[in-house]
Image (cartoon, rainbow, N blue to C red; front, side, top):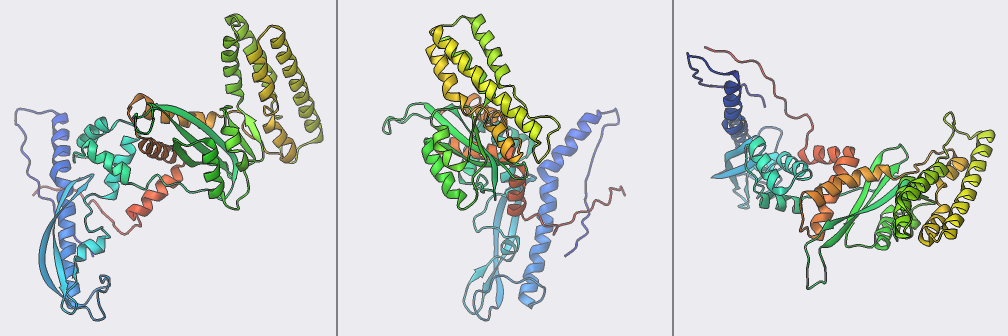
Length: 442
C-alpha cells in the first residue's frame, strides 16, 4: 500500500525581524506535539480503511487469524485508542469487525500491526525509556522523556515498565574463553521482617567468548557465589569450561565459580592495591607500604614476549618459565620478610595469592593463548553499575537492583544482543519506507 501525503502548514513571521533560534524552536515544537503524531495517525487511518474494505470484499493478501471454518465479516463500529510513542500520543479510531457465523469480533488494524489487545505504548518508546533510566534516576528520566519524547512518562510508569520488561534476558554463549566475576555494594531497602538491613550487594559475571567478544552472563542480589556458580553451571549445559576465571580475590568467588573454569587468575592490579591495605592493618608506615607496593608490582611484571605467535617457541617458553619461577621465589622471600617484621596479615595475603598470580602465563605456555592478568574489563562495567545503583539512587529492592544491573551489563557489554533484541521486538524488517520529497509554497 502506497500513499502520497501532502502537508498543510500555516506560518506567520514578524516583518520587524525574528531570531533563527525561535523559528527552529517553534518548528520542532509543532512537529513534536502535533506534526509527527498526525502523520502517523493519517497513515494508520488510511490503512484501517483499506484493511476493512479488503476484509469485507475478500481481497488483498492479508487476512486475520481465522475464527471459524468459514469466516465472513461485517462492520461492528469503531473504538477509540490512544498509544504512546516517542513522536507523541497517537489517537486512533479503528474499525471493529464481527464474523456472521461465529460472532467473533476482530480489530483488523490491531492484528495487522501485531499489537496486544491492551497495549498502550510502542516498543520504540519502551526502548527509549530503558536506555534513559539505565543512566539516570527515574525522576530525572521522567523529566528528560517529557522534554525529548514530547510524551510525559511519569516515574512510576517508567518503573513499572522496567519491572515488566524482558529486555534484560541474557543468553549463554556457545563457548567461553575467559570468565570474570565481581560485586558492588548498594543501599538496599531494609526489611525488618526478613532481617534485611540496608547493605545490599549485586554480583555480576561476564565472559569473553572464543572470538574475543564480551558477553554478559548475569547479575544477582542476595545470592551467594556458590548459588550463582550452580546456576551458571546449569546454564552452561554441555559446553566446555572457560580457560580462566579472573577476579579480584573476593572471598568465596573463586570457590563458587571454580566449576566453570579450568584455571584461576588473581587480578594483579587488585593484588598490589590490596597489599597496601593489609600492610596498613599490620600498622606498617606509609613510606614502607608504598615501597613494598612498587616491589610487588615489579615481581608481577612478567609479560608474554611481544613477538610471540602460536605455536610457542621453545626459547620463549623457557624464558617465561624461568621468570615465573624467579618471581614466585621472590614472592616467598617477600612473605618471609613480612613475617620477620611482624606483618602477619600481609605475609598470609601474599602466600595465599602466589599460586594463582601467573595462571595467564601458564595458559600461554600450554596453549599459546594470551589471557588477561587483571579484571579491568569487569571493573569498568562495575563502575557503570555502581554509578547507577550507588550514586544516583538508594532504597533499591533486590529484584530492582538485579533488573537494573542486567539491563546495564547487557546494554554496555553485549551491545550486539541488546540491538538484536530490540530489532526483533520492534520488527524492523524494511517493510516501511518513507521518502521526503521536499517542501514547496503555493
